[in-house]
Amino acid sequence: MGEPLLILDGVSKLYGDVPAVRGIDLRIDAGEFVAIMGPSGCGKTTTLRMLAGLETPSDGEIRLRGRRMNEVKPWDRDTPMVWQSLALFPFMSVLKNVEFGLKMRGLGAAERERRAMGWLERLHIAAYRDRQVSQLSGGERQRVALARALVTEPEILLLDEPMSALDAHLVVHMQSELKQLQEQLGITFCYVTHNQSEAFAMADRVVIMSQGRVQQIGSPREVYRTPATRFVAEFVGANNILPGRVRALSDGLVEVETAFGCLRAKAPADDTPEVGRDVSLVVSADRVVLGREAAAEGNSLPGTLIGEEFVGAVVTLYLDIGRETELRVQTQQHNLDDLDLARGTRLVASWRPEHSVILPEG
Ligand code: ATP
Image (cartoon, rainbow, N blue to C red; front, side, top):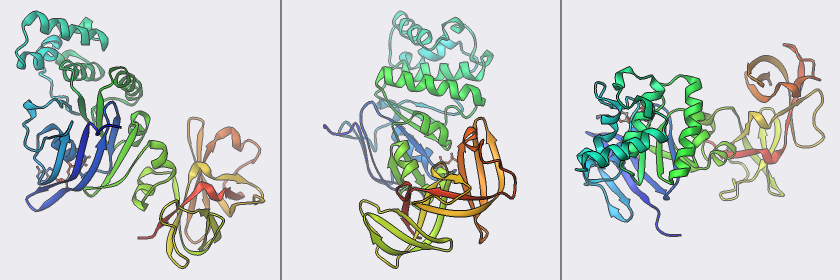
């Protein structure tokens, strides 16, 4: 493996004395689709703006192909950005908007038009070439913004919440288009969003940030299945987090004494917690199975059904397991056909120890 395309080494950004980004380490390979996500104010946009050259890091170093980028101006780098506001020229034609970056680079009119038309065709907006951007729909504008950024054939494309102005069904459509495009082009995408389903649908790796720091970097699956911190477990959602204390360690499993009895979880590969340590046991809602009886093996918790939510074929059930605690269970509707459920039904939630993870408390 060669050196990663892009390296962030201990990158921080202070605005006055307000830390927006605090010591981020990140390596991005050529051709990767990386999504940076986290709640509002966590430092996502600031990180992206530093990659674009719109902000200078207060500390640390950004390297692109080994070259220090900290002081390189936006126009001297090959990292265009697509914003949520799109920043298009509303009264200019689609073609002129897309040609803009090429004009700035001094390309002749014929070559500009040839290249820009290539992208308009690729993104299915060639028919609108002479229309003003202000006369397009949100989805069409989105394509113009992409065409404008891609026409200069950048190595990295930076995208800041580019779909936040689109309605839900268009977002799903654009997601698969964008992912396909990125794979075909082999361009590195660095995509900022607060929307988890968007990030998980497209990214090879996600970076989860909180309060200017990276909490976890991994594939969507890794982050979802094995959250590294309590913040990630909560942020990723649909996780049940049960506090307890390590009682024993055996056969690669950790026994945790909780207010709901003794539960077992897979021991973390690194950092196995010692007996007596306060931990949280995390089990994702879709790993929990409901039945009338306790499972013969594994973890079981009895409870009372207190609510259900349907989204398409997926249902989320809420089980009162006592001590003012609700357990969330997510499953396909057809799995519930035989249970004859009603509010107040007594059920047993079960899951396999290896389907839960242990996090240090605090
Ligand atoms: P959002 O999802 O709301 O866009 P974000 O994760 O992109 O949030 P940033 O825009 O990077 O967050 O902001 C990180 C922190 O830095 C916030 O606390 C914000 O108030 C602060 N901040 C951002 N820009 C500036 C600025 N120009 N001057 C001072 N503080 C700033």
